[in-house]
Every structure is written in structure tokens, then in C-alpha cells.
Length: 294
Image 1 (tube, rainbow, N blue to C red):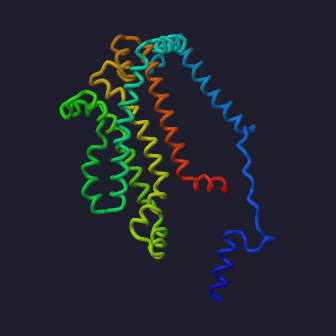
Image 2 (cartoon, helix red, strand yellow):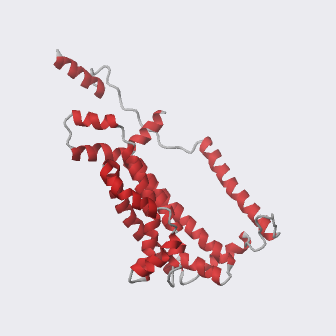
Image 3 (cartoon, one colour):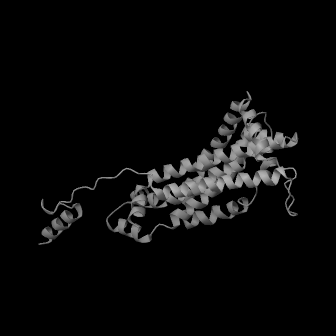
């Protein structure tokens, strides 16, 4: 009798209780550009256009609002020629390649250490009591404050710059990983144990997948913070780099070039974070299925 119950349940789960009731798989319709998506895109483009128009008006007329003034802020009409001037510069490739190397080197190191420590701290109260107090003391220290330590600790300026981007990315990854591990439903772990799963299997098949969304969020934030620290890192020393170009433009009072450098950093940071989010979605297909159901 029990065997019949088990069989019937498995048949119901697989949708194959009888050939007459077998459900055919629903064809997946390709994603289409719906009017609703078009309205959202139009609203986003309109928002960007309104921002640029407002910026042009405030800067070209040198408007002063008391608390903030646009008397010295370059207008978009000044920034666009500076942008094309940088595109034609023979140093552009060196600027971008050096910045990418520094940011991604620091980010990869921060991601590896942050995820590893986060998984351990999230699962062990003893490890948390040992490691978290000194880490919480280091966490609020801004990137610019690490410059003297980086210069003293590392033999080369390149390693010093990578270290600062590493420190910028570390704590978002670490804290989000800890949050993801601590948020795992205890019932999932208890169920896996009751089914005879070993600790390694529970960690790989239950804890890690459940914490992946939080880890992905931490990686995206960490990538943005690494780019945020780029200007600070390249203040140490350097002949090339987007951050160095931005700081040098400020020193030379080339204000339009400052905004061009800021635009490059913002664009690269946004694209990097979006890429990480897409990778995270590919690693968690069950979340997309849940969103479709709701």
C-alpha cells in the first residue's frame, strides 16, 4: 500500500499519472518589446534629456542658488568636445587599460577573500567573535585614509593602488555574504540533515545557493565601490589611468576634462555592476521562475 502511494505521488509530481492527463510543456514565447516596456524606456530617456537640458541652462547662465553655484561648472556643450578630445588622445588606451587592471585586480582579490570569510563567519559564531571586531573597526575608514599605509606597506605604487581598490570592494562583499548565510532558512538545513545529508553537501547544495543572491548584491556594490576608490588610488602615483586623468585635470584646471573622467568612471562602474547582476541571475534561475509566478 505504501509503495502505491509513493508511486502515485511521483507520477503526480512528474505530471505523468496517465497518458490522457500528461501535460504538454508550454512553449516559451520569446521576449517581445511591449508598449509598456516602450513607455518605461521613453520615460527613462526623457529623464536623461531633461537632466542634460537643466544642466546646460544652469551652467551656461552661471546660475547661483546660494548653497550651490554653477558659475564654474562646465556645460554639456563644453564637456562633449573634451570627450571627443580624449577619444582622439593616444593616451586613452593606456588610461583605460591601467584603470581596468587596478580595479579588477583589487576586486577579484576582495571577492575571493570577502566570500570566503563571509561564508565562514556566517556559519561560525566563534569565528565571528574573533574576526568581526577588528573588521568593523577597519570598515568605516575611507579610501583616502589608506594612502599613507598603502605607500608604507607595499614596495610599488601599483600594488598600493590595487590595495586601495581592494579595501573599497572588500566590505560590501563580506557583509552581504554574511547576511546571505545568516538568512538561510533553518528548516532547509534541518530537512537536509534529516535526509542524511553530510555537512559538505549541506554547505554546497543548501547554504551556498541560498546565499547566492546576497553574494551577487555584495559583488555588484563592491564593484561600484572599487571604481569609486579609483581616483583615490591613482592619486598615489601614476602616469596613466582614468582616475589619474581626472585628478590631473583638476590640478591643471581643465574642468571639462574632470567631468569627462567622472563620466568614464561612472559608465565603467555601471556596466561592471550590471554584468555582475546578469551573472547572478544566470546562477539563480529559480528566482526568475518565482518572479514569473508572482
